[in-house]
Length: 204
Image 1 (cartoon, rainbow, N blue to C red):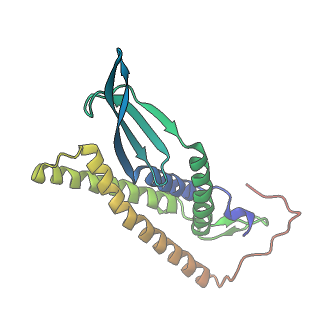
Image 2 (image 1 turned 180 degrees about the vertical axis):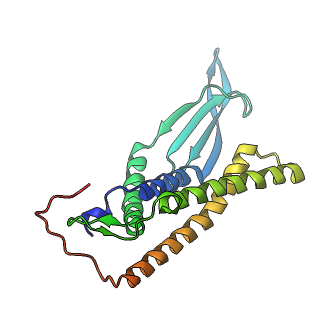
Image 3 (image 1 turned 180 degrees about the horizontal axis):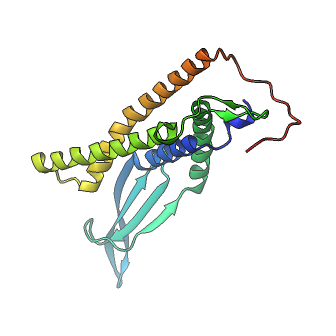
């Protein structure tokens, strides 16, 4: 793999943030346990609640109180090793895809790939898809809340519907743009990648 395929691009960064946020918020695990401890010379039972976010867990919130409803201040723990490893893995996945779709500037100064600007830029298209998923998720959450009156918090319903639509919409959008990229290469009869001169400086 050539170096330009792991260099950042606007589309790659947008995909990186979207995938990382999905990983962190897609799974939430809550657990409670009874804790026995002395209180004024007598044994007293406390309830300790723990909520973990992410798959694998990235954020963990822990609180303690006399009951499940009455909980004291929370403590937060961030798994920095998992965060760093996840970002590295997503970087190695998203940056080649973003660079392949948007194209890149070769060392000879020639641009490899279709030059799309404005609303036709791949990053703008994916951004519009994400905004569309948010709007549709908001509408579905409002309809679901008014018709069924679910006890789930409204914000969580919006997030859940948005994640569902993102899982389908974003990959389909990327597949369409990859196919469009292949069609562009076929029209210009380009095969493989240009041989680059290592001694030539990279142009911004």
